[in-house]
Image (cartoon, rainbow, N blue to C red; front, top):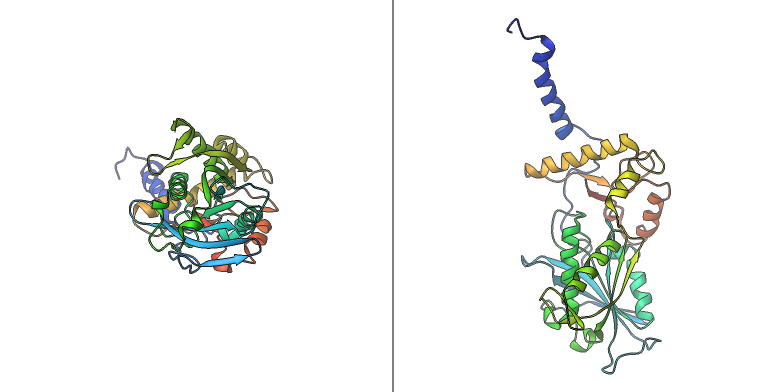
Length: 318
């Protein structure tokens, strides 16, 4: 070692490289899974019809991107008359529904669709790519850009019968009950922001009295937008997340989550499988969503009766 180089300076570079390597590839108890989930959730058959009191539900797969990846959805139509007056051609209003951060349509969202159908409205809800029985990978990736693209594809499907996937199993008179001139967008949590953004986008593309859907489908009129507990301001959420527990995760929690995210990014760059952290969990654990004492048990109550422990959707990309 040259006499003019001190030992601390000589060790600085290898120490820094070692810290970076540990941060990116070292053990991390906050990461609960180091491998992707299998593509697709519960087995669904295109065109399967399930009937209940006042509603009929049809499984439907549709192309969500030009590459051919398919999203899975449920189309609910009313089976009884209701307070909602059909139009002159017998059609009823349609609600397009989108789920929030890490959620799937079988986590209780279908109960809303059933209520809409029992009240005389048609409803269509679907899982984004990477969730539930939809195709696409990586699985359980919350990506607003992908979510909005899938939501546009769902709107295009609803606006044009020509957009129905081959073998969808929906007779023309069944899907035709939905009135494209009376459409409501319904989103919860993260999707509450999605539907507001999409409604604004459609409004900017108005042509005469009809909002044109990106040139992909016929005219569609958005008559209502419902944003249930919407995610609106990422900067405000970040500030709240950094506040001390239990209101937020605190600086230590932010740094732990940031490390898990860095590990996921580094693994993706090297072509490795993703790193997952829970969406919610007990207090003190590192989760994607802010940790509130009731969050963990709320998700369990919603999902436990419907899906197995393996597929409760409690995991998300870091």
